[in-house]
Image 1 (cartoon, one colour):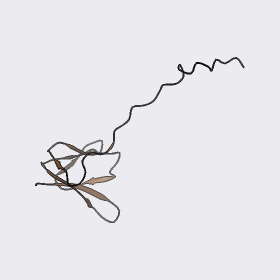
Image 2 (cartoon, rainbow, N blue to C red):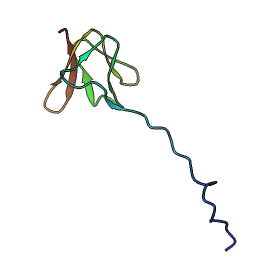
Image 3 (cartoon, one colour):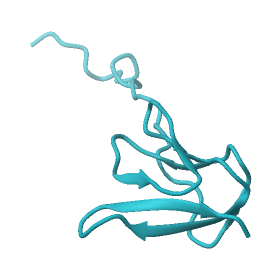
Image 4 (cartoon, helix red, strand yellow):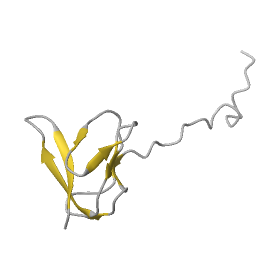
Length: 84
């Protein structure tokens, strides 16, 4: 029964930093070469035209242009960048 539970602060306060994943540039927006479009785990969105895929599955633009999200097939999506 002899537990000091009243303090609280010494046991709490451990939380990991957020990973900041997700879509960074949406369809129709202009983008510069080298800019990140999507941060993801695995290929939730696949790379399309004028787009590169990093080793951590980050999708980035290879040219200056406009972002467009498209269908790869019935279930998969891809993102492309077209010169404006």
